Image (cartoon, rainbow over all chains, first blue to last red):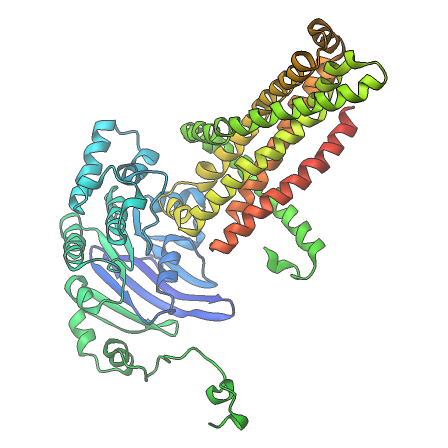
Amino acid sequence: MNAAAPSDDTLIRIRGLTTVLNGKKVFDALDMDIARGKVTAIMGPSGTGKTTLLKHITGQMRGDAGQVMVDGRNVPELGREALYALREKIGYLFQNSALLTDFDVFENVAFPLRQHTKLPEVLIRNLVLTKLQAVGLRGAAQLMPSELSGGMARRVALARAIVFDPMLILYDEPFVGLDPIALNQVLKLIRTLNETLGITSVLVAHELEAIKQVADHIYLIANGKVVAQGDPKTIADDGSPWTRQFFGGEADGPVPFQYPAGDYAEALGFPGGKP
Amino acid sequence: MNARVGDDNIVMRSLSQIGDCGLFLLQILAAVPRSLRHARETVRQLWFVGAMSLTIIMVCGLFVGMVLALQLYHVLSIFGGTAATGTVVAIAIYRELGPVVTALLFAGRAGTAITAEIGLMRATDQIAAMELMAVDPLAYVAAPRFLAGLVAMPLLCCVFCSLGIFGGHLVGVSWLGIDNGTFWSNMTATVDVWQDIINGVVWKSLAFGAVVSLIAVFQGYTAPPTSEGVAYATTRTVVASSIAILALDFVLTAFLM
């Protein structure tokens, strides 16, 4: 077996991923393993490349070096047909839902089925209604995306992401804009999908309390590398400066709160740079 | 794309855009066979860019024909040649005004709508969502709009020409009193099907349809994903299409005459 090939219990294996964007090193020889059938959370300060990492997994972006193995295939080396075949097995929940604005809720959820299958209309209808029932929006099937709240749109996008029962679902900030009831239901849904269908889930999120309830494994990334990892309890008990600052919400620590800038007093116009 | 050339060099930037647009055309043409399985989407776009443009095309065609007949009648009356009004109206409309004005109106009505729609789809991640659902946006979004524009333009041009000649008849015959038989017989005797209708209406409008649709889809597809980016792209569609239509009209006329 190839050294970088994933073992059976590893769905995604990232090795030495290095990405430079606009002169900034987003990933610096990043290594990461995502276990098959588990819920894995990727956390980290804003701008550390969490969404970019998802884009590498789906082949939307290619790194400057390294491997991104998904289900035994190195994503950066896949051609168009192979990449699309892989994407049919991946569900992706966008930060902003990305619903197709020309279609109503029902047609949005039915879209992947209509594009990739020739299922009879009755079966498509039943599948779509089942998924909409799971996210609590069966009654909103005829609404247009413009008539939905942000939280409802997110749930429709989630129904669309799971309509094919994919092997992997990537959630980009799934909890933003959800009220406590919807949040709880989405958490239950992620867990249920994982337990009943064995779907591997990767979540990018900042809500530690929610993540603790649903994640089996947490990666904390900063400065282009994994700085901490483990199950939620291990991460919570970890006393490293990274975890202390991130989960404690402290401004001072290894992650600078301020974006790099010149001298503050000088920028305010004080002579000689002194107030 | 623009990073390849200096922002200050407008000539190089324009050439770079034309080059990118040419490469984009090849991508669309390659995606056309794949887009055939989205025939329903192509028909939907044909309705959107074609049928929905009918009102403006018909109204403008009518008024262009009317004003043309009015002007020509007064000029031709100086030489006692008012009987040729119908002929000159028809030749002017078939050869030049029909395809050119239809294309300019099409760029303003349908081209801008295509650019804004695709630009907003990109800004709201709808294009990215399609890619992640393994649906090729070139085959589902770009190619159907390009094909719809290509098919709609000649049809709209025919409608424009028909309404233009009807407008000329209204003013020349019904208002200014030219003999009805003279109006039609002079026109049918002079207008040549190949030279005036095939070359003028069909080839020119096909070429203009391809150029306007390509520019509109390209500008939308490459628009920066911001409100300002979409606004600029929409403006660029009108400006670039207008210049391309008039320049191409000169080239085609020179070759087809």
